[in-house]
Structures are given as structure tokens and as C-alpha cells.
Length: 419
Image 1 (tube, rainbow, N blue to C red):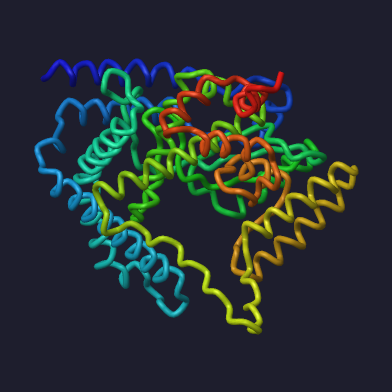
Image 2 (cartoon, rainbow, N blue to C red):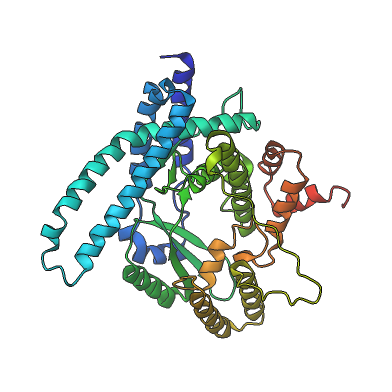
């Protein structure tokens, strides 16, 4: 085994131990009261991380993906994603068989389909580790090209594992939008169970809670949802690696210190994830890049412009602004009634949001890489976007924001002449 590979193995173990030490929940009376409802369903990060690190160390030691030419590596990734799509379709058909009231013996009717799924699962188990190694290598190459390395290597090394992801129990006060707690629960909690947990917490503590699904989690190795969408996959892998990158620096270490720092972390990761993900697509999968948005067609003189289409981000921005105003006036019940009315409007336009409340905005509002949306007019997201736009490169942006420990530092960097 090469010295480089041994060094990577040692580094992976050290980083994994370091980041795992920060995965414990902070203590507090309110949190313990919440956990009275959530504790039986809480996700076991320690066991997951130990198992994932073991898998990754074997991958690094074997280096199986390195024996394939680059074009064959990319094709293997695409073949694997086709396999994931085939599994998804087969699982949906299986669910339909068991839900169809006209099928009296679903076990017999699904026997061939279940055998097919068994074979597909075996293929996934064999190919998954190799494909993960390929994507890790491709993203590492792009990260190195962008100047985000130490001694020519990403720090920490890019490692991820596709897995069923924990859900996130988000808790906010009712009188202000602010994430108080984020507790990871087991994957695939049914909607009725989610609603029951939320109702109990809300009634017991007079708070706003919501259990949400996530696309990735920045532990080490990072946890990435299983998907057949290569554009989404590369972006999420990069996004979560940026959290690893920041976790070894002050901004990431202070993620939970304040809502402003959380938004700075998430917005920086979202911006960087998009840039890195697109660079990976351009280099390794150019034929699958999404097309650029079509330009608006000019209207002829005297022609009436077409009525605007429903804009989800703009509608959500308006909703957030109205809710913030109502809460600032102490109108908590009015704000909650308004959010439910807006949820129904969104539902009518095809956006299947189960619950729109303070916890919803507290969670999604931190992802402010684009104007508007659930963040409303939050100045933190705009400041991060301004720093990103003013930076000479992604590396310059990240190396600047990574060492910040407050929103005031971010504002000072944008206005250096202001005392």
C-alpha cells in the first residue's frame, strides 16, 4: 500500500473522531423535555459513523475505482444511477400491488417482482462502494482544481456514504422564527407518527415543531440520500463536504452558536455546493448538464404581457415577511392562521407542504443562496451572497468566510472603510 493511501487512512480516522465529538446534543431543560417524546426514535450517529468509517477505510485501502479509465468510471456511475432508478420503480410497483384492493393475494402476485428486487439489491450492494469511490475521486479532482486543498489534497478527504437519512425534528418558539433545536430521528417515520410527535411537543412546551426530510448530513463520512439524479447528487455531495471543510475551521465550529452563523454556514455550503457540483458535471458528465434558463421573449408593441406564472419563491418570501411582521406585533395566533391559509394556496398550486409554521421557516430560511424564498429579507443570506459575488474565486470566498465567528465580521468584510 502506498504512503499516500496510508496517510489518507490515518487522516480519515482522525477527522472522523474529531467530528464525531461534536455530534452530541447540547444540554438544557427544554431539550430534555422535547427528548421525552423523541428519544425512542432518535438516530444513533455513533454506530452509523463507526460502520461508515469502516466501509470507507476498506475502500481507501483497496482503491478499486482507480483501476478503471476515467471514461469507464463515469459510465459506471451512470449505470449505477440507472440501477437506482430501476429499484425505485420496482419498489413503487410493489407498493401498488399491496395497496390494490382488487389483488386478493399480493404476496403471490408480487413473487416475481420481489425476486427481481432481491437481484437488484445485490447489484446495488456490489456496485455502490465502487461508485462512491469514483464520485469521491471526481469531486476531489475538482476541489483541487479550485484551490481547496492542503498539500494538494482536500482536507478533510472527500468521503460520503449513500444511506437512508435521518429525519430532522425542528423546534422554534411560536413568537419568533428561530431554530432552537434540531434533533435527528430515525429515517422513514410515517406521517401520522410525525404529526403525533409534533402535536405532543407543541402542546407540552408551547412551541412550533416540524419533522422534515433532508438531502444530506455533514457528519464524517457525510450522509447522502440515495438518488438517480446525477446533477442533484454531485451538488449535495459537494455541499456536505463543504460542511466538513468548515467544521475544521471557526465558522463550522460555531455552527450552533447563533442563527446568523447557521445561516452563514448553510448559505456558504449551498453556494459552494452548486459551483463545485456544476464543475463536476462539466468535467465528467457534460452531456447531462441541465440547459441554461430560456431568455424572456420580448413583447410586441401594444401586446399585453402574459400574466405572471405562480412563483413559489416569491410567494414564500411574501409569506415570510407577513409572518415576521405579525409576530413582531405580538399576533401569534393570527400569524399561524395566516400560514395555514397560505399553505392551502401553495397546495392548490401543486406544492404539497404538509405543515407551514414557524419551525418550517426556521429550518428552510437558513438556506439563503438565492434571494427570497423562506428566508424572506434576511440580511445574513444577502451578505453571504455579496461576499461570494465580490470574491475572486470560490477558494477566496471560502477561505475568508471560514474564519469568521460572527455576522458583524461578515458585515465588516463587506464594508472595510466603516469603523
